Length: 325
Length: 309
View 1 (cartoon, rainbow over the protein chains, first blue to last red):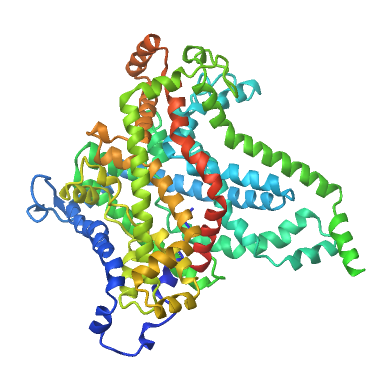
View 2: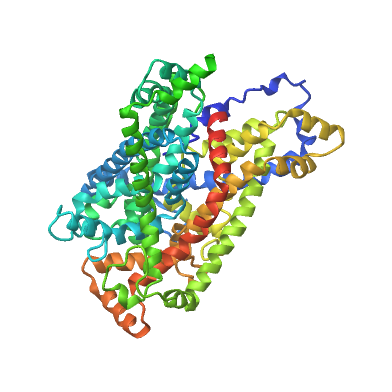
């Protein structure tokens, strides 16, 4: 889940307007702020080199790029590489996988995080509550390499706990090579993501819950409301603004289905369902050395994401919910 | 009197339904903790168990034949020791430079009278919306001669925009009077920054340090992309990633790697499974031991970053 993106619009409109200052000349004021300039300008230069200059590289998508020559010394091909993309069956396959997995992760991620936050909030024993939170944050901090190693071990044929439990419960007759079943990959990927991030994602909701007026609960108690009624009629509705904003913002990231989990859990047997757009770019670019097609696919992703994000930001602004995220 | 009635109301509202709810809730959340923790405990048990004995299976929460041989083997391998050293180095240098740099920019753009406040802020925030993509970034790193160098771990990611906003929000929350009195005392921006802002911002700096350190420690993709041909710059996560890729390949039928590993195994009394479990523990233990102590900071820092935007 992405957080902090809504901040963008607040950032662009700083609350205090600079114009109110007496209009001494711009240059004079600039010179009087040498220290602030020294603090920020080196990093602005860094920013332009590492974040803005690569945008020139987008030209590669419109060229028949040969790494030995300079960027301006290439053969221009127009939209040829984009035409290739949109006629490539593999491109549609990775697009399907990207959208499929990010939708599953989005829905699963939301439902589980909200559910867990509601349950944690109902715990009265402070020590137990703290322990649950600490333990559930843990998988968020480990790398995807470690997580993927753990997931693939848990799903393995011989010693995997999943197979051991399923066989002992009689749900399956013999161990299943889960990561070899391509149709299961989206589900495995989604559940791995939930395992890793559900605890972390509750932080936002738990913070929002603490802002609910306690009087509401007191009133409900006097009315004799049950725990379930309190959750359903007070807590959940109070989370609505947070949920809406987070949902809108996350829709902006719909093409970001993640890269590490799919790459690390992917293998030749589940390839047709595990490969997503990022892996496609990596494969064309690094493994096959076709920089132009890889860049074209990258541009497609960035542009579509940009439109989604921009729309999401705009909708979020329209909602103008309490300034949570 | 009224208070007494209220006390009664909160205490005695619990009927059978609420009681059942509590039982369900505590049971379910305990079960959830087990799911979160079990894989680690299991890997720890396997890493502490005799390698050839582990092949028989049945290791769950506790080693059957306790040994430190797997750890001795892992730390006896020069390449892994070196990768551990690189991981530690990039985490320390990366975190220090990133937190200091981000805090400096954050301080500059938190000053209301800073002439370039708007320009710098927008320039940074815009980059949240787009990036050059894999290939253009790769070509840039190549042009800058950062391929096969340690600095490719530090320089390209020195400032994270989200961290920048979190720190800036925190600094904006520091009372103006402190800055004014510093100014009256004749303190310049650098003095104010180091003597006032940094010490007061410790909670948020702790949070951001944790985020950056975790990012640095966990990174493997930049190693793979930029430094895969210089093994002396490999990191722990990348070494584990290679082991994982090997076992993925062997699972799907390419048994050559497996056979090699097994032949190796009978000679050294280690197996791919044990090595992987040991590496998993080595690669995650440092973080697992640190993050609980910073919990109150990151929960606060994260919420603050969001609420104040």
